[in-house]
Image (cartoon, rainbow over all chains, first blue to last red; front, side, top):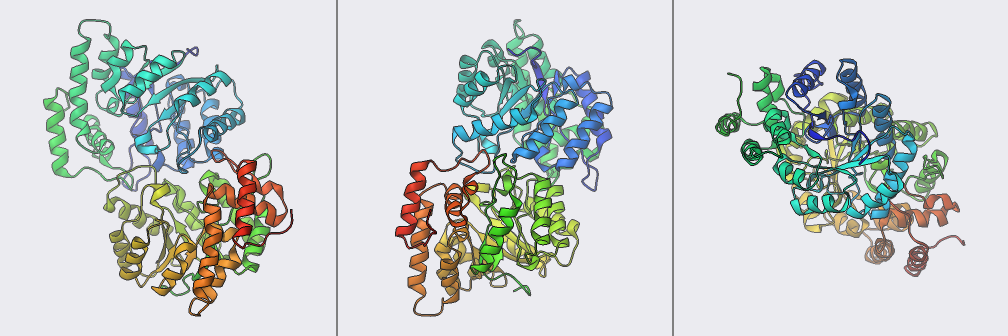
Amino acid sequence: MVEGAFRGVLVPVATPFRDDLSVDADALVGHCRWLLDQGADGLALFGTTSEANSLGLDERLTLLEVVVAAGIPPTRLLPGTGTCALPDSVRLTAHAVGLGCGGVLMLPPFYYKGIADDGLLGYFAELVERVGDARLRLYLYHIPPIAQVGIPLGLLGQLATRYPATLAGIKDSSGDWEHTARLLAEYPQLAIFPGSEAFLLDGLRHGGAGCITATGNVNPAGIRAVYSHWQEPAADGLQAAAGAVRRAVQAHPVIAAVKLLLARIHGDAGWRRVRPPLQPLAAAAGAELLAAVQAAGLELPAA
Amino acid sequence: MVEGAFRGVLVPVATPFRDDLSVDADALVGHCRWLLDQGADGLALFGTTSEANSLGLDERLTLLEVVVAAGIPPTRLLPGTGTCALPDSVRLTAHAVGLGCGGVLMLPPFYYKGIADDGLLGYFAELVERVGDARLRLYLYHIPPIAQVGIPLGLLGQLATRYPATLAGIKDSSGDWEHTARLLAEYPQLAIFPGSEAFLLDGLRHGGAGCITATGNVNPAGIRAVYSHWQEPAADGLQAAAGAVRRAVQAHPVIAAVKLLLARIHGDAGWRRVRPPLQPLAAAAGAELLAAVQAAGLELPAA
C-alpha cells in the first residue's frame, strides 16, 4: 500500500448552484465542513455525483483553490481530474498536486470508445510523466456504466509496476461485486474502494480500503459507522441500515435525489438545482424520496 | 433552410501532432488549404476525426485563431464546440461566432447517460441564450456509436421552433440510413448531413445537404465529384468509386488510417501520430491500407 493512502468513507461532494447556475462556493465549503464533521474520511470533489463533468475547466481550478483557502485540509481531498483530453487532465492534476491534495481520482479518457489497453496505458503514462511530481497519488476511476471506457484489470498491473509510488488505488463503480473481488484478490498493494456502500462491509472483509459513495453526501455518519465497527458484531446490522437508506435514494436519479435531500439537510432550497442536462426531481418524486429515506431510518431536520 | 447554411462536402479536419504531441499548426493550416483546393466546401475543424476530444480547451481556442489568422475564410469553418460542460461549450461557441465562423457543430453533453429529452433541451436552450449572438448557426451532432448520448428527433423540432434562425442543421453519424431518411422527411427546413459519403447520393436524392465525412480528409476530390454530378448519369458510378475507397479505409481504425494516408499525401511522416489513448496503425496494417486504397482507385503520391 502506498504510504498515506486514503482509507475509510470518502464522499464525492455534491456541487451547489445559484439560480444563475453558477457554483455557490460558500455552500460548497459549508457542505465540505459538515461532511468532515460527520466523519467523512476524505472528500472526492469533482466526482460524477459532483456534476464535475458539467463544470468548466476554469471553474474546477478556481473552486479547488477556494476550498483549500477556506481551510479544508488538502490532504483530505481527492479531486477528480480526469477529462477526455490529456492536456486538461495534466493541468487539473498538476494543479491539485500543487495545492497539496492527498490524491486525484482519475477517469480514463472517455470520448473515444473501443480503446486498446495499450492506448490507455500510453495515456496514463503520459499523464504521470507530464505531471512529473513525486507527490502525485493516483487513484483510477472505473465506472463503465457511465464513462463506458473502463480501467482494464491488466492495465492496473502494468501501471503499478511502472509507477509503484504513484498508483495508489482505484474506485470501482462497476456495481459488480465479482469485479471488485477480483481487484481485491489481484491487487492487495492498492487501496480498493467500491463505488457504493452496498459493498462496504464485504469489501473491508476482503481487504478493501472503504468506499467512495454518492449517498455519503446525505448519510455520512450512517455509512461511517459501518467502517468504524466493521470487525464488531454490530457490523451487519449497520451495513443493513446504510443499505436501506441507499436503496431509497437509488430509486430515483441519484444526483438529483442527493441534492433534494441536501436542500433539507442544509435548509437551503438552492441545493435542489442541478445543471443541464440533468434535471431536478419532480415534486412528487421528492416527497416520496423524503418519506422513504426517513422510513429507512435517516434522520432529517424538520422542513 | 437557414440563409447561408452549409451545403456540399465538409471535412472533419485531421489534426497533426509534433513528436512531443503538441499540435503542428503549420501542417494543420497547410492541410486546410489543400482540402479547400481539392474542392471541400467546408472545414469541420475539431470533429471526432480531428481528435478534438483529445485537445485541451486552450488548444482549441488558440488553434481556431491561428487558422483564421492564416487566411482560411471563417465562413467556410464549422468547428466542433460541444463539450460535456455548458460553460466550456458556451466559451468555445462564442469564440467561434466571434471569429466569424459559418457555424458550429455541437455534440450533446456526453458524460452523463440516460438523459431525458427535456434535459437536453434545457442544455441547448441555455447554450443558445448564453452565447446570445444572432450570428450563431447551430448544427447538432448525432453520433450515438461514440458519444452514446444522441440527439432525439423530437428535440430537433422543439429547438427549430424555438430558435428558427439559429438551428441550421444536423450531422447524422448514426450510420443508420433509416434514421437519416426520417430526418430528411421530417425536417426539410434543416441542412441534413449524413456523417459518411456512403449516404451522400441517397441523401442528396432525398433533399440532403451533402455530407461531413472523415474520409474527406484523404479523398476530397472523389467525394466532391459525387456532389458536383449527383443529378447526372455518372452519379452512381462516382458514388461507387468513393464507396470503394471508404471501405478500404473503414477496414482499420479510421482516425489512424486517415492519418497514415495523410502522411503519404503530404509527404510528412509526422502525420501518422495520434494522441493517446488512440494508437497509430501498425506497419503491416498500414501497408495493407495503402495497397487497398490504391486498388480502390485513390491516387497517392509516390512514397
